[in-house]
Image (tube, rainbow, N blue to C red; front, top):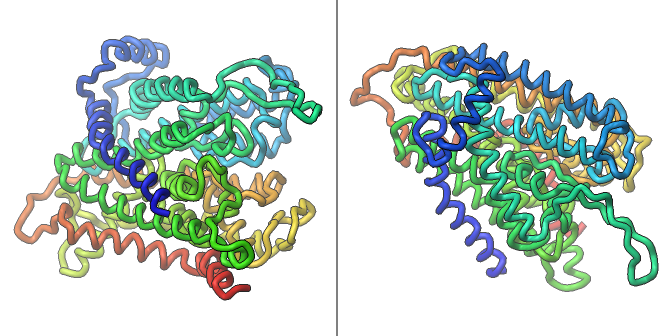
Length: 568
């Protein structure tokens, strides 16, 4: 047991060590300060701006920034959808794969445009190399850069700066953060054994004399941006559990750090923008403590294993749905991290997690800020901060202020919209699906929902799918028969609502904050960089999460846990 937690601790120590340096670098990039990459990147960016007709000095309002996001994402989506539908006649298709169904192509396009990468297909048997590289790989960069741009624009607004220009932020996110790190990371994965080839699948003869076809492809570069950009979509059907995506302990560590480095660093970036590093570190440690608590809860559950199985074979960790090369500890850490960062990649099957793990993964996606998605997760953290300032202001009878700016009706309305969209995008489609579904004991595509687990676990399967879509996470309680017209179209609702409605509201909220005149600090001003306020913020986050989603958690993993404990 202690060996497993020691592995987890070493990974977290490495995260804490790199966070301040990376957070400082991101701040320099978006504050337009000098960095080591300037001599190489500046000429490249000038060419991009000239070709795109981008006026780099023009700042946007919140609505203009949102319009730029929606328009650019629409154009990208149409481009990728056409690649999918014509992949049968496009090059780089060594296995002659034909176009997927229109609804699967639509779901996949929306899923990757929204940085969700929810997959209702197996990559190696559905999409060609061209579709994986030119379509999905392209969106992995642009959707991640879009989320990072929103997060930075929101931080600018909170700290009284103009929101900036979306197209400039998009370009800088790719050229100065995502692309350079991805090149280095892809080379590291390549050296560690992840393949990178355009050759067709290999046909081999096994020791038993049978013929086997082994899928391969340009995986290394795809894998790293998958993790760094919080994308999560796997080149192969079993994602980072596949030995070609994640062959050993070193690649597992590299991919874990890639997943969490940007969300963690952005909290420190905020502290630099706000000229208040103390508050940045307090928020970092608050999120870190919540995260570690969920890792311990999940890890203990996996180490103790299934009590019904243990009665037959003796005490044993839960190894169902796990790769032996990672074991229970690294799988538990990955599961909490991938749902906390909204990445969605998996190195084990979440459907096989104990109820503790089901609770932690769902809770992460419900609150969306432990550590949060690419940029947008950081914005959610500050939405909770604004609500905490409002609540504490009500307690003492003062007009709430945040960073020297008053929090008034417009800000609270927008903050409420941001937090209310999420349960709407989850609970309504989940209720509709469960009300018409037949729960079965084995896969059955003739049922509406294709639920493959009975009882409480089946409820978790359905709720998890919509939660993953609305949170732009993409992971799943796999086993659900989700490659159907019903799931493809209903999940699209959660994907779009969970991405664009909060994004627009976040930008309008940031725009409202940046237009406010700062008020001088007085003896009665509530300081937000104290342990007390940070503790209250943690309480608000947990209470709001519990109040909103507790019935779902009670009917899913909590009830399942009690059922197992009773020996049923």
